[in-house]
Image (cartoon, rainbow, N blue to C red; front, top):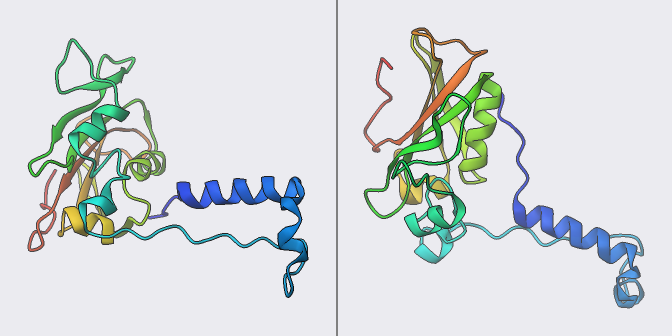
Length: 195
């Protein structure tokens, strides 16, 4: 399965600042520093994630505390536990949040209109930590299953994250994904053999 390209917010911000600094002349001091080549820019690497709570504070979707999730998502006042935007088919975008240890580790992401599996995985990638990577994927009659893991995911859900992509029809259609159900896996747990 093709993994969508994601650029970290810190890296993107660093690039923007570097371009602006270069466009403004960068104050002149760096270009005149001994051993520094004019026209080059050094960007500090993005910070790494640690398993400490402070190291996970940046998460605002999957893995976020419920407070951070609510700060970044709009609850549907008519449907507690569901989050806008309300879709054309009358479903809320996010429902069925699971936060057993104080962090959101599961939810249902609704898509309307239906999208391709690649687009659905891009939507999922926007929710997962930047270091997430696919370690397993398979297609069953009723869904496609994708398991993702990373150091950040392992700090919260050591078995990884299972995403099940389903279509509105009874059978899975890679060109018409309408729902992505996200749930944590335990270390000793494999994805179920059915959807």
